[in-house]
Length: 445
Image (tube, rainbow, N blue to C red):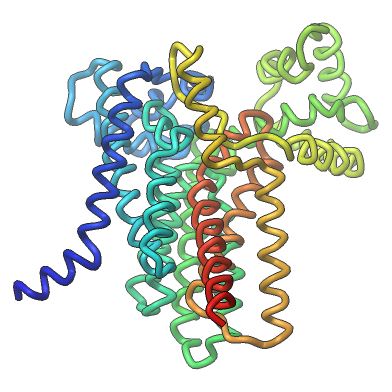
């Protein structure tokens, strides 16, 4: 028994604990120079999470999906009614969950890579990158979203290894939690649609399990449909939240797609609001949005947005493509939570960008190379190993998060896509290890 424990300690636990202790030490030092700003981002105070936190059980908040307000309620049990204490406890809880995710990231890297050097570098990147862990200091879904992506990837990897029905149920539960944490993760439904089709044709001997897995995804869809129905009953809106309508309205006003066609009863009114409230020093959407939202219901704006896109589809697509191209050079490691900003924030941003110089264009490049690689393997009809399956589906998840964010959001893209950083670290470090092994093998020959 003692020998077995020592073996496990030496092979698995010791390095993981050392890496976790290094992560804690680095974060502790950084937290000494960072002054937390719980409401650093505008989204924290606008349509506040506190409204969801203070609402009664069963009451649907049309602006916020329920997981994060429930998280606030659970944490709020351990303090008084003070908002400051609640925020302090929430950030502490987020930090603990984040550190747990560091341990799971290390275990994930152990499953996918052989080199302890690769495992160590990847884990330290994930655990010590300021553009990841500083989100623990604000009241937003980003911190939990980053951690839950790691939990999901680990659970998914375990399923690819053993393919147990209990693991399918766990993945379905994680999917539901993540979507109700932030609707960006609706891309997980497309992810599983691709995955179950893939499994149906590739793993023919396990089609029964594939059917059960697909059924679990259908159950998730039904629960989300039920939540959307409750939202309609209570708030008159069939959907997860109003935020998507607000963002789409921003985009349409920014692209100036309003006032461009007939037979729309509110088009002239919106055009008049824009003209009367436009301030040449600011973007039109930023100035006029509040006035437009005051004048019309969200349901009306939702229908109006769809008509605008339908009647101006070419302009809409060109505008989206132009926006994505312009964002290509944007570095993901730019958003840090620090009240004072100044030199400290500049140094931390510079450090993050230096050690992991990742911009949105490079992410597209990663996705492109991965697609070409797996298309080549399909043409050659090669069998996919565990790491190759994980790479492919991690790439699908990353592409989904990126697409939903860039097409559905109107600002703060670096904050909204930050959960893909863990996937990028995984893909890049595994690729480097693969290249290094190939070069080493060639040198030996």
